[in-house]
Length: 200
Length: 200
Image 1 (cartoon, one colour):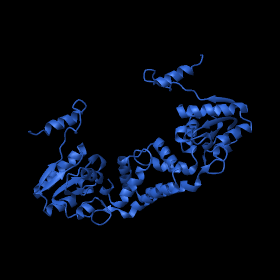
Image 2 (tube, chains in turn blue, orange; image 1 turned 90 degrees about the vertical axis):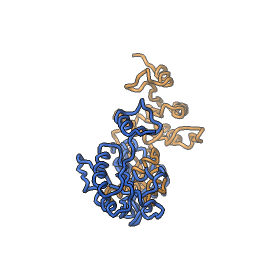
Image 3 (cartoon, one colour; image 1 turned 180 degrees about the vertical axis):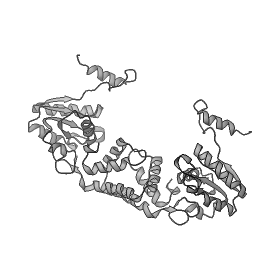
Image 4 (cartoon, chains in turn cyan, yellow; image 1 turned 30 degrees about the vertical axis):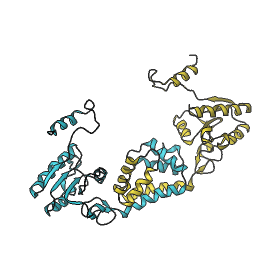
């Protein structure tokens, strides 16, 4: 396909195609968009890309992305230091933050246990989580992995090693999404919604 | 939203969001992808972006994107110089090239006539097209604008000014897409398919 473009465009299309969710068609559209915008807008994107490297590290406490040694959430004295929410990825932490409901702190595992992909607990930030919980101070650990096989496995594993350390360990509910329709819900979700039912 | 990210990530998410077809969710996914890939891959993308500027101009003959003064197609002596296909945008030229069917040369208008958006013929490469056709040598001019109101308007306008110059002027067919289903075709397409019917 690249043969249809002048070399610099082919190169940019090729680079865009490497990004997740960008197919050949989108890559072409993006490259042609870049051709049309003013040079300083292109430079802004290129510079934002280059600025990422080196300027971002992992928070030494929760392993979220951070500019400094400790992230803004861990450094915030108004966060409730008795509740710890464990998530798989930084993007899950952001999803939790957007609820504006959770005021505790986080621990980012940087993945989930997945024997098929060779991800065992020692490749995740599990040791660090154990150490934080063992230090005490947490009343509750909220396991907020995705409701998938890997997420559930990870949650079960974490529950088994964290409960003996003392705090209450909970898991975010599985069930019908708000605004969902029973008729369209998949079987697995309905089964979970039944299983997680509670008295009203 | 940006407040949830460290500044360099927020900046990159913001830049990605400016691209067409990239919403806040995709922008976040792309930025987090960039966080995970090796530094040299990020640099390759940034450099491809920067390399576009200055290295690409418009072919002085057909106004397609080109690295040199004349594009590869115009410079190719094996292209049929008696057929001229007029397209609105470089991406339309690529679509035509992918058919591997058309062996003539092109003219890229760089837009279509659109009174609503203030695009009049003098803002397109129409004068240049007229000059090429007036120079003679073309047996047929194929108008390959999109089958839209603007595309049809542009084609009608071009036909009116090019026909007096001598060559045959044709328009790519409107009709049922291959593999399409009458039952699902929109009314306008069916009307066109009827109108463009030919004896078999």
